[in-house]
Image (cartoon, rainbow, N blue to C red; front, top):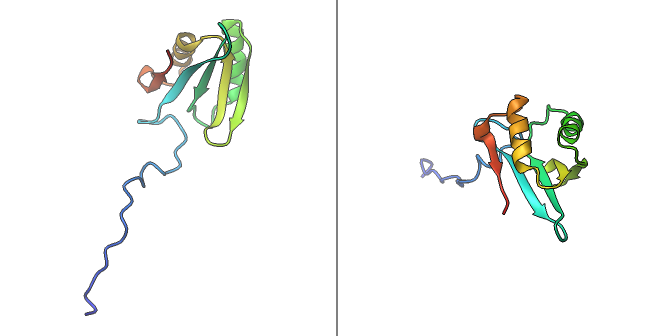
Length: 111
């Protein structure tokens, strides 16, 4: 009876739980727009690699698009860049032109 093997528990989500919080081959940078009140909106950028300086990227984005913004520390998502206004297309072209990521790794969400 010592040859009896008990199957170990299989976790189908084990690959998803690996801590890879960067924009790798299958990791995306998510650019979202959130409606505030009235005509006001907010653009959020998440999923950038941790080795990038978020404050320097934010400074360049603010100067390029003439808008205000901030870096917010979220407990689930990590650091998120927030910009005033609907800057989805502007941010995606900026990230590609600056060489931060490829166009295939950017997902644009919103209405």
